[in-house]
Amino acid sequence: MKPIIFFDFDGTICFDRYWRSLPQEQFKQVQQLLFGDGRHVVEEWMIGKRTAEEINQIVAEDLRIPYDRLWKLFVN
Image (tube, rainbow, N blue to C red; front, side, top):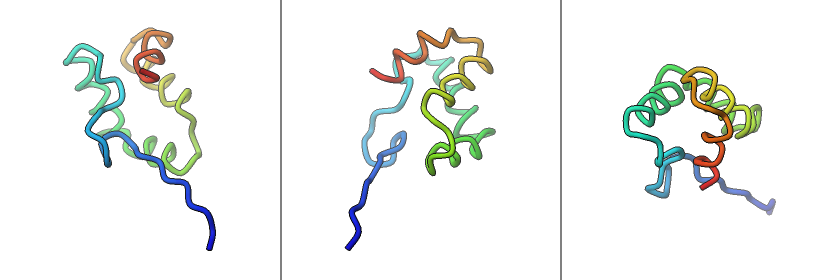
């Protein structure tokens, strides 16, 4: 039997969401960017082709949110 590592992605098992502390409008934009229009990016993240830092960089650039602020919210 092989060991298994299980990761919980945004709202899969837990009810907390990444970036939930953003103002509501920005939070909606992040959700649309990653889980709507950019679903392929999330899929790459889920299988290890992208890092959390890369995802936060994409969001920061696309939505013009300072990366450092976004990263701190993500980690929290």
